[in-house]
Length: 467
Image (cartoon, rainbow, N blue to C red; front, side):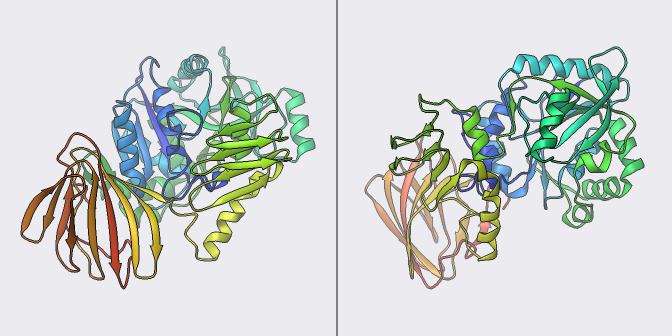
């Protein structure tokens, strides 16, 4: 049977704030090397025998990041399913199984995990294939090294058949420290990885038995979906009717077909800054440092600078993260509470948890340099060959100054080229478009002025990206 990887990329990564934001979550960040976690997940499939191009399931607002990051590493995808709203992993798995309900075996992988030993990962996946082909639902249990309280656990039962797997006795919620220590000492418990392998038809059979309302809603969402380029847009109303529940609760805790295979391959879910410190390279004092950082008598810290110099003196076991619009300082033992900061920002109506100063678009990106009452300054980068939508604004005018590359400008009925050090003015209410006809990135300084400068003041007339 062919293996169809299904990459679940719907998470928001709030515990890695302020680097991870709702509009640019952790799976798309380069946290440990020059690949994002999403790209590393795709590359992990290289060399996995019998593996077909993966199917990605993601939030609708992340669709172009998924497509662009896959393209950047020459990864071929079989499709991208867009969730109009987040409903946890069970509806996402149902969508994949319904989309691929032939003889395919689905390998469910979160987009934001690290695995150091990929050869061992491949070996265990192929061991699991024997179980999947005989009608079992396989989950991969991580062999624990320490008594972690931030993970759920799987209690293994008797040996399953003649392979290396075990029947699942029970799933256990996140324990306290003493209980976690007892679990690790017993050798009968694994961390719950959230990775699975099973036949699409087998999963649908079990879901129809244990959670029929999910398959019913998702089937309707697929039958009313729209296909746009490589994107499959699920129907919002139907998909939203599905229960919001994980595949663990919906099926795996109820099925009699569950099997767990131990996996010891240097796994991390990179679920917090402490976890990122744990997998990072450290200096002689145990510090993991990224960016422009100067330390004196500092030990056991994770310090990351995105823009400015960070200087620290006499700090131990802390996390210090600097971004353009926010700074986090936290005791390393309490970084699991960073999500509470994100909730507070949301309650206060602030935006620092939503977007970063640099915002990515399918055509490139823009960065807000300054914003004041009635004016805003941005640096816009347009990728070679890319084109923004033909658009108009009701409340603002714009000045464009080209600082690098060549711009093709549409303004009203005229179209003309601008090169470096040239500029133009777009009056309020005039249709306009910016394009990069060149072979190098186009950088433009945009000065907006007007009574309202929000991103929603835009009327699109033509758009290459279906927005």
